[in-house]
Length: 165
Image 1: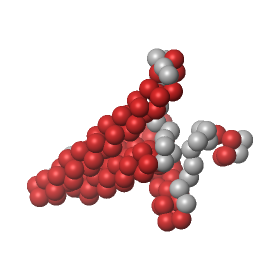
Image 2: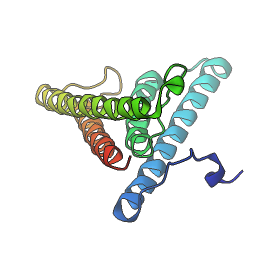
Image 3: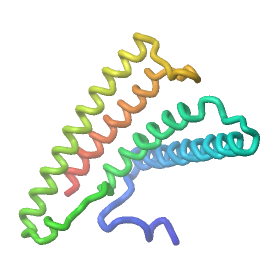
Image 4: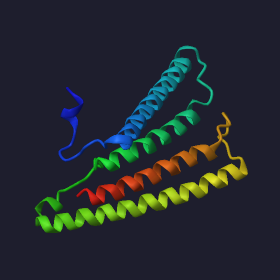
């Protein structure tokens, strides 16, 4: 199955710099997901075969999962591939459906913008207080900052998606 056959109708990859950025985000998400799989595999094998689990596997998986989710958010938002349930809206007149789609886009833009803002504030707090994970001492400030930037990119993608309707 080719990649193009799995695309949703009407979705498209961005072009130019945004396309390169989307490619980089997909690559980063893939590598982090691979790292999560390796950590989990080593932890499970260590735990059940050698009775020695991987120290900090839970913390590392938490951080990696958060990053994978936020890395995928701008791409999914730009391509309008969020999960939708249209049991009711599919029966509405097309004018009303379009209006609801615009309203949903505006709400998504606002939620993502607030999320980016609050994550930015949280990143500053984490950095100021030197917050880290308990066992591995992974600094939480940079993780929250990356998540804030990715949420801001998602808000920008939501704004662009509103004008592409």
